[in-house]
Length: 303
RNA sequence: GGUGCCAUAGCUCAGUAGGUAGAGCAACGGACUGAAAAUCCGUGUGUCCCUGGUUCGAUUCCAGGUGGUACCA
Image (cartoon, rainbow, N blue to C red; front, top):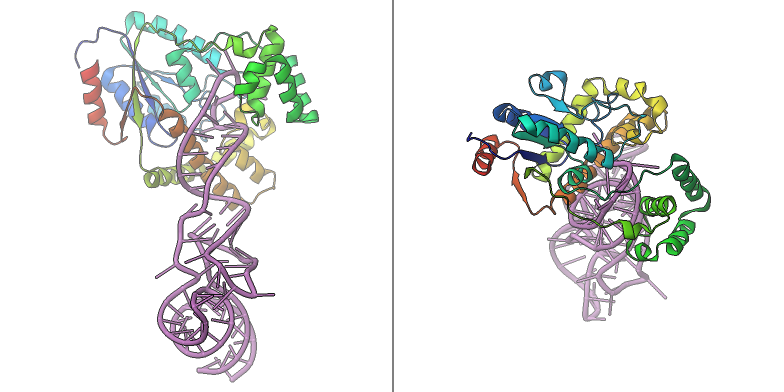
């Protein structure tokens, strides 16, 4: 490796099960870097097996951040992640040149790379109130409310998507301003370089890896882990591929085979959504997870 | 071996009173600014088992074949 002059964040993305963890750890060792996980489910300490979080052994010798740092009952969001990561990097780059950020949560990665609009926190009671309104009155009421409060956003938003509408409404009601006026979408200028690397496999190979990984997770007593958090199953953090299906098995709603089959299907779909997100990055270089040497060479030329 | 039933999308199956076909699931494509492994939107991808016959026209009717299935031997 040449001498690195500019602090650089190496971002490694890719669909679930493609092999990001292994590549990131090998790179971290070669480059003497630490790792930030940008995986919105590996934050939670109660669910390492089903989220394929890096194990203690894997993390041996490579410092990891944002793995198992939260409880599933903690409230967390992208903005906090951005704030914490940027804070960490500011410190880290005083004495180091390279950090690796690896993960599959596109929104979280974008927040770190590009920043996210500064919006106030929403009162818990307001969010709850809106959720109840939606439960009781349905989507139509929310749509009408949004048309009154923020006609501009009403024109752009996917009106069938309750989450988008609820979000816009809570911001409008909390701030007294329109959501559209607060959504400026400025791209943040970061005081470090960013190099994006994508890992991909063809569909057949990825599906095969997905199936094998599900099998391995079950071998590692995933079901015990699921049962241990069953009482928390309504937490958002557990609205997660694998857990929601196995909860239905545990409750007796589905038989085992059905649950496993659904996990496979939903994991494939998740991987597809991730690829859709990452494919729009125009500053990314794609590799197979097997070509570590090519990745190192590519980085070497750019650092 | 005999008789009945079945053969249509990747799977389970509808359907066409003869004018080349459609549901569910799967699959595929897309969106995405504080719940994102979330949430939402879009798309039929087909030798209608094979061969021949009748017909202007057969996936549909007829005959034979092949495969499956049930019952009888």
